[in-house]
Image (cartoon, rainbow, N blue to C red):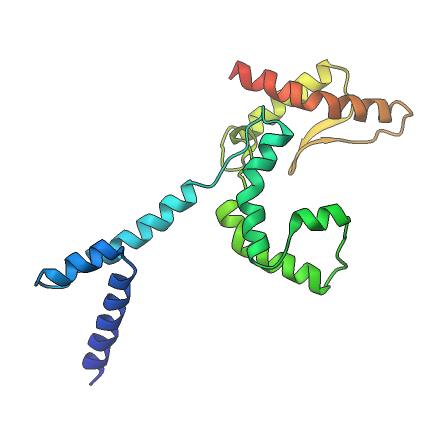
Amino acid sequence: MRRNAALIIAAVALAGLTACGSEGETTEAADKPGVATLQSAAAAPAASASKKSERPRERLDMTPEEYEALLEPYNKCMREQGFDPVDARKKAEVAAAGSEEEKKAEQANQICEPQFLPLPPWEKDPANPEARDFALDVVKCLKHAGVEFVEVSEDGISIALGGDQNDSRSITLGMDRIPDCEREVAAKS
């Protein structure tokens, strides 16, 4: 009895997978007599794996306009899930912890981020085994430019306060120089 139930479940699953194919594939399969195989089921994971590789990636030399264009599929997905990040930014809404708006944003982000949120530039990507070396070289460049109290932290590059009035100048200089130093270091690689 269990074996029959398992066969019925497998047949229903196979029929469902076949239904997921394109219209042309379904018609062709219906026209050809033969034995059902799991070949069509194997194509589904490959399609989802290739979709992950299509996730956009930022570049160090991107303009703000290019980044906004790269972000549009993510924003569209978020809107489709019931949360508009652009509208929330315009209203400067900061959702209180545990609010309904925050819950909507988190739920939408769980769906949209893995598919559409741009990956960081490869030089800064934690998946890149050379990312820390890149950050260390950027810190050297910043220190050479006169930025004090700069270091590589877990989250990237940090410019810390040192207790001096020159800190604000150092922080401003660091924020201004980071993009230039990143491009210089990337050009040398």
